[in-house]
Length: 338
Image 1: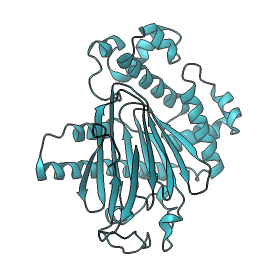
Image 2: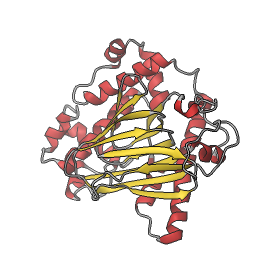
Image 3: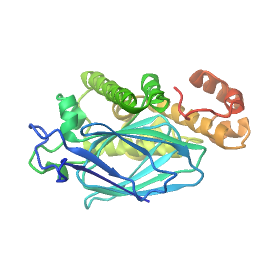
Image 4: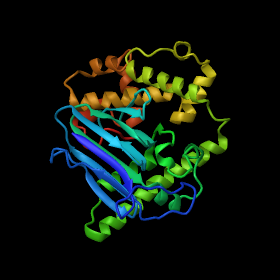
């Protein structure tokens, strides 16, 4: 299966305008999923000029592999509500990078001239929402860019030369409620489009407000090599949920001191290493409750808890329900509930 993503002028030509100057707001995001199997295609909604909303909500019984290619890139916001997703990215001639997302992860991405693959691992149901803005449309809505987007090239033709951006963080209850409203939209026709437009802009407004708070309180920006090491540490945590390394061991493995590593987690992912680990463990545990026949004690040990009692206490505190209750109601709804 293949997905092609591009941003074009309404007449069909590519964007050549400067990012920071007045440009044609009719630049449209073009996402072509025509190669998808009809039962797996996402709902692709144009909610206003230069803005598209993609909604995936369907049963997934086997591993799904999607090759993708991006020419002129949109600014994309993606929200993972169920299943584990692995994204491989190759920007130009650079070495490929691999990122993994779990339920509750949100991503800001700007990936010009990028090819890669998305692997979605089988489970009960695939649920996710993404927003894609042409750069001109985003600038009209948000003239004051956050620090994380200032690296976008402002030279003519810069879209193909800009450095890629891929920032991942956990989203909270307020964002989850908006995502849920999009999935459960009760309207049709023009009223539905207007409702979805309002909710899409609300999602981005929440993220922009989050960035504003972080940037106001944040220490000096991280060096690029430090960002790579922090991302490596995050992947090591996700890969070893059953026996995670200590923060000291993790800092030694990636070559950062403990304080810088923990500060980097807060800047890149919005939380401490301990809290990120706890969220990832409980999210995986909920998926296992829904999609496996493992006993509660087996699930507890699989995600790193030394007793079923400790696991049950942590799970109830996080989700407001016991593991037995979640399993009994057959895990209705997306896998992430904050």
